[in-house]
Structures are given as C-alpha cells and as structure tokens.
Image (cartoon, rainbow, N blue to C red; front, side, top):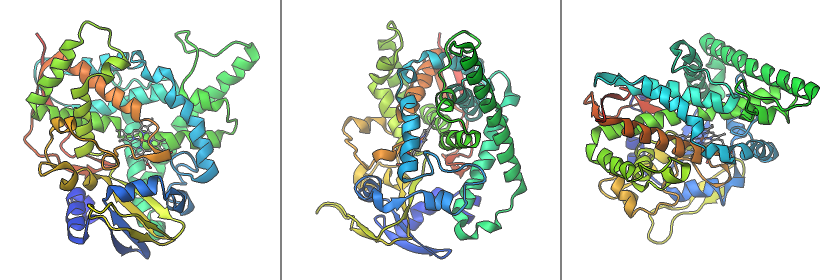
Amino acid sequence: MKAIKQDRFLSFQTETYDHYGASGWTANFLGHRMVYSSASEHMKAISTSHRDCFAIEPIRVGNGAITPFTGRGVSSADGEKWQSSRELIKPYFERASIRNLNRLKGHVDRLLANIPTDASTVDMQPLFQRYFLDTSTDFLFGETVDSLRQPQMSWPSNDMRVVQAGLRLRLQLSSFMFLHRDQKWHAACKRIHNWLDGYIDKAYLQLAEETAEGKPATYPNGKPRDDFLWTIARQMPDKLELRTQLTAVWIPSNETTSILLSNTLWALARHPDVTERIREEIRRCNDQPLTFEVLRSLTYLRWTINESHRLYPISLQTVRACIEDTALPGGDSNSSTKPIFCAKGDIMHCNRYLMHRDVRTWGPDAEEFRPDRWRLARPMWNFAPFGGGPRICPAHIMVDTECSYVIFRILQQFKTIEARDDKPYTAVMRVGPSNKYGCKVGFVPAG
Ligand code: HEM
C-alpha cells in the first residue's frame, strides 16, 4: 500500500521479485499464504491444465470483497455459474457486428473533432477515457452517454474509478475488510447502480412494448435493437440478477481500451520512426475501404499494439485462490522455472508485468519499445495480455480492433505527433496501472 501511495508499485514488484526469485516465492500476508510467480509455465498451468485446483469466487465474492457492488457473474464466479454466465455473453462478443467498424466511426469522428489542430498541447488520456465511455455505453446499453460532446456526462467513468479503487483495496484487505468503511465509495456504488437501473428499466419497458405490439423493438433511428443489455435482458427477468451480469462485464471493461490507446499513442509520440512505418502501411491501403480484414492485415500496426500490451499491461496479474493441493509444473530442462507447491487456501499470483519484461524471453532490450521484435517473436504463454484458457478476456479481438482503428484514423488525419513532456512512463495504480502524467502530445494536421 505504501508503494501504491508513492506511485512506485511496479518498481516495487520488480525489486521484490528480483530479490525473492521470478519463478516462485511465498509470503504470509494478513494470515494467508501468498504464492508469487512471474513464470509463464505457472500462468499457463493455473489458466489451463491445473485450473480446476483454483478458483476466483472465494477471493472476490465469498469474502464479501465485491458484493456491495456486484455478485456472481462472468468475472467473479466459478463452476456452473461461471459457465452459464460465459455462455450468456459469448455470442455477443463473437457477433459479426463487433467486426463492423461503422459502429466506431461516429465516436472516432467526435474524438478527432476534440483534438486541437493548431499543434497546441492536449492530454489524450482523458479524451480517450471519454471516447471509451461513449463506445462502451453504446455497445453495452445501446445508448451512448455522448461524453465527447457533453463532458459533464463523463461522471460514470470518474465514479467507476472510485468504485474500482475501493474494490482493489477491499480485495487486498482480505480478512481485514471490515476496516473499509469509506462512505464516498458506497455513495459512488449507489450512483452507478441507479444509473444502470435506468438502462435496465428502459430495456424491460421496451420488452413489454415489443410483446404487446408484436413487432421488434428498435433504436430511435429505426434499426432493430441488438445491444448487449438487450440480448441478455430477454433471458433474465430478475432485475438484480440482470444488473449483476451487467456489472460483471462492466467492471473488467473499465479503464482498459482507453489506457491501451493512451499508452500506445504516448509511445508513438516518442518513436517517430515507428509512427512513420505505420503511416507507410496506412498509405499502402488508402484506396480500399477500411474493414476489419484490412486492419488485421496491417502487420506493423499489430506489432506496435502488441509492444504496448507487452510493456504496459493493463492487467498486472492473474490472481486465483487454490482450492485443492497441487504442484504447478516447472519448465523443460532448459528452463530455470521449478515446480511450485500450492496448498488449499493459498492465494496464487502470476505477474504478467514482469513476465512481459523477462530478459530470458525478450532479450537484453526487453525494457525497450521496439515493435520490430515481433518479426521473430513467437510468444506462447510468455505474452498473455488478455490471460488465456477458458477464461481468456472475451473482448480481446474487439479491443485490438478498436485500438488499431483509432490509431489508424489519428495517423490518417495528423502528419506529426509530438511528445509534450519528457517524463518517463510512471505507473499510478488507479484501476490497473496508467501513466501518472497522462499522454500529453501536440498534433500537426496532414497536408
Ligand atoms: C486493453 C483491454 C483489455 C485487457 C488488456 C483485458 C484483459 C483481461 C484479462 C487479463 C482478463 C483475465 C483473464 C484470465 O483470468 O485469464 C480479462 C477478463 C475479462 N475481461 Fe478483459 N481486458 C480488456 C478489455 C475488456 C473489455 C473492453 C471488456 C468488455 C467489454 C472486457 C471483459 C472481460 C470479462 C467479462 C472478463 C472475465 C472473463 C472470465 O472470467 O470468463 N475486457 N480481461
């Protein structure tokens, strides 16, 4: 907590793992045995081969850490409840419409309209947060809050930051959670609940009208309603249960794509050679319509986004409670990773930030932003920004597509992106890590 307060949580992780060992050390923390590793073999085992010996529910729901805000849903439950929640959301994330870039176009137009064209300095981090609030409310609830046009509407992002910081503290406090009595946190939870209930009530009302009138519900523009809330509301008549399923997706989606975009642009502003290489790729496909397939074919842009995920992961670690004694396997004979024992009741932490910077995998320049390394890199479990196995982030394709699209459009519109501060990336733990100094840049429009 001291390291978090001093904004040196990531360097604290590096120092601690350097001291105790990258592939497994243990500590007694508030009465719990904690197991820590940054070895890809252990990350893989808890996510796949040994996943049945681990669970999420005891550390999120069972101890009451998240229950004032949400309950058992896709990101917090195990077993059958997780399975049914995952099946509920899966079709939505796999739909063809996720690949349709038109759903993002209007939002990106408004994002670009907010960028000064006189090369004056702008902090893109808060702008990306507003952009992402707009796209995610559109996607999840079928109605954007339109915060890029109405900045006062960005309050749900600010409240969610309070909610998630409180959730993280509660998860850390573990059995001392009774010490968490923050009235501001409870008030922010309440405001978000009321706000979500507004969308839910509207969806139920529209469902009732649809049944009464016998014709499909539509958006104001006449298109049939097909957003995430609408899809699951049909199957869920219980309001509290519906809100729980919604918050279980809303929590892990917050402060994610926006921070990825902010980190990527921050890096591009410091690497004009990389920016130029992407611009060349964009020029080559300028006369064809911009589609999901065209975006996915831009190799150098993909390497750049990978490099951003690698160096500045949005999710620091995968944490699981051990529910059955087990030994996680070590690496092959060339690996320095040893098997590690986890006893029932232990809490296992797999650190992705350190795994992504391990010189044994990435070479002596592991700390450098160098998209070219992806020409030869064949990462398996040592690159897992979205986790892996059955619980892999369901939004991973959507996230990378959205990030590529936004960067594409920005580079099409602006000739130069200049860094406007000389501060190093300094992670501050708000929800996950994000740059304390934001992403201050200046843009010069293309000719
Ligand atoms: C930069 C963007 C994002 C990153 C890096 C990211 C990363 C992750 C990671 C590491 C996990 C845990 C996977 C595991 O336990 O193995 C996860 C889970 C999840 N993410 Fe994402 N995420 C991002 C954006 C989003 C968005 C935008 C949404 C929703 C719209 C979302 C929804 C979820 C859900 C529902 C889960 C829980 C899945 C389960 O437990 O079955 N994520 N994400």
